[in-house]
Image (tube, one colour):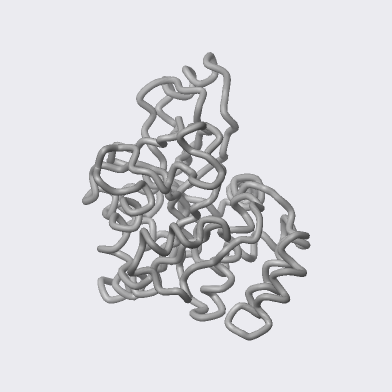
Length: 284
């Protein structure tokens, strides 16, 4: 059992989508200098550097960053250990599905059994040990053929988050199946969710076999999937730039929640690990 678990971690690759134009923290955070490039917590490091450091104990040498062309120089300066083959530069913003799916497709070309974990560059997580514990369990559950999300226990009826409704316990220390994802609710509905004990906040962290993410995308958004695969096939070849130029502008803008997470939950393919760590989204 343990050897298969260590194999799961060997197959793990972290992805940091570092996009966005920082509209919620304007004027401190602007398109040219979004919030992840700032030290907003007084840690002495930027949010991006904090996210990178948090992932290194479980993904050293195996962390990919997806960011805009406009941020390339700043990202490379802030992350001197980032291997240039593990940076994807977007010519223009195309929302989270394109960013995460392209990372998944490029990594799957290189390593077919790869399990990717997507972690936003602008989250603040204080308890590293609990974070690692949740991610390691998520990787093991993902290896059974699931898309796994890390759910936060709601501390109040917040209307600022989407919610995740849990179902049956799975054969894993803390995991549950996901019945459905729910949009940001009204305060009255949020209160019902919190009182029921059946719901978690959706923090947008996803851990899954890259192949599975791409299979779901092929069913829900076939054109977007086809464009992503064209780019991924050319990625490690001299044709990268021309294919990226022709395909990227045509990719549909859609959040990963709508394109992958929600439809996959309807098919019984999603699991949730309850997070036991404190978490903040600095934009909120």
